[in-house]
Length: 124
Image (tube, one colour):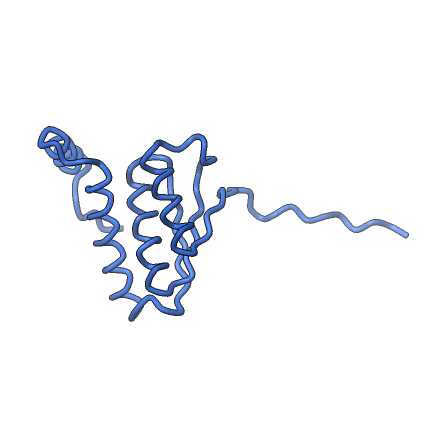
């Protein structure tokens, strides 16, 4: 993995945006648009592609959900795997879940259990 920004720098930028009165929804929208554009470029478009994102309960998860919603509106099969139940998400993240669903994407809770449980065969 090659980090593109230091955590402290990103946190400082977030704090500066908050002090400037820029709403979180605007920041998430901008981040989601940038991620969706990068994804489209990487995949050669969105239509007909399958896109899956693991989204946590914080603002970064909201950014991922914003990107998925944008890709779904461009024809991608979008699925969000959330690390928390909807009622455990923040207000902005729940708004982003609704955006994915409204765009035709699927949102479900991620289960880290691997391999999945298999039913044991019964003896005759």
